[in-house]
Image (cartoon, rainbow, N blue to C red; front, side, top):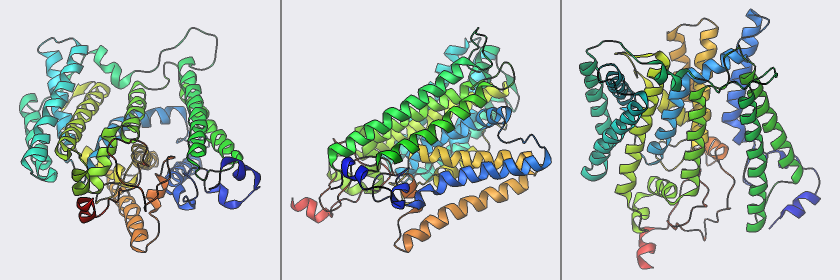
Length: 457
């Protein structure tokens, strides 16, 4: 095995560069695919907008704030949807559930005079009940999730219009803060928003901590790790990106900073990345999605996992619906239309497999940002909704098609390599699933021993 020490002594090798965003010797240049695509899209639209306006329009504080505000609810849906798709399911009801929750919350504040904090709790409770209803049919009755959520899409859309009587219902100022608020200003004579820059510095500190932790784990496991200079370059590059983004959010027009919807999204990304990567429940999701029968024989309660994944999706849909209503300052009859398609597209562009068992929260967020900047950039160039829809469809088709083609040719999955996380190297000859372990790589589909061999043991 190659350790940190030997890696550091061997000098420069071009192959080391390919490890910059990967986990050891199995990584390759293909893993830059999705993130590289996002960077190319942003730079392309910046160049195209500069040709129209020398100041540009894409990489400006105001536009970045708008992207977060306008697409945070889709990214929140993508967090839940990736877990559903990893399980081998699909949820078509998320847009209708979000709209249904939004109208109930708006009515509760307008007609029942419910304080807005209690209205938020009510909305989350509605998400739990809806998710439990759909999860029951999927997990314990055995109806395919596609059918259950298709029925939910129709039912909750009709219920939303029935309750709201196809009217627009405004929401109070306090409630609007979760959709239109920003980090507060601090009374200091500085030309930027202090809390936003502190958030960026915390991000840099986390990057440094995570890289050091990763190298220690790799060294302890005896796995091949990149030279120290690769880790340093990676942390420096990512830190520059984080600080630059923080600076742009912190120096926008007066009264703006990092948006509250972005803060909620960031918290959810951290929480769900931890859940899927470092908890028994997260490992059960991948195990059931990768090989349900083997996971069941290993003691995983697959019905319980199905139930809670579907319920979790509806809770996140309820949260996304409330954020959208808060941003729009009212609940309307057309809320949530088409959201499920954008969320599903984000997850598949971000690396999830149609057959289940593969996908990551971070990959889905990157996929969602690809869709967000496509929408935003085309809108800045004055393109209509028809052109936007066609281009988004082609991007989705090619992103998934190229990955499937790579797998059919016996090559590593381009998206699977991108979403590979740092972790314990897996030996397919000796590694078997243990539902109590939580340190398996989360971007690889679990391949269990044959059922006959398991029974024999």
